[in-house]
Length: 106
Image (cartoon, rainbow, N blue to C red):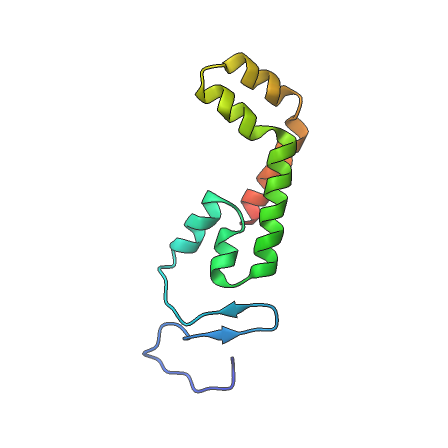
């Protein structure tokens, strides 16, 4: 990336080909990638072309959500079964702590 002349009028490079990633030549709003990372960890990295880190974050989030039974607790709370949701989350508190690490990283 350092072997070209710098144009002061250009805000971003058109594309960058790295060893493990590819950034394509389309310009996006800088707020789009954090929004996708907030929706599901790894999506923002995939959008930026960092596929390996994106896949790792996605797999980690799926493993943590499955073992923490977070989606089942959300289903119970949406249907009004709050006691079942509390019971489901009480047994899996230690796995829910791992999920916050992924959100902080992304």
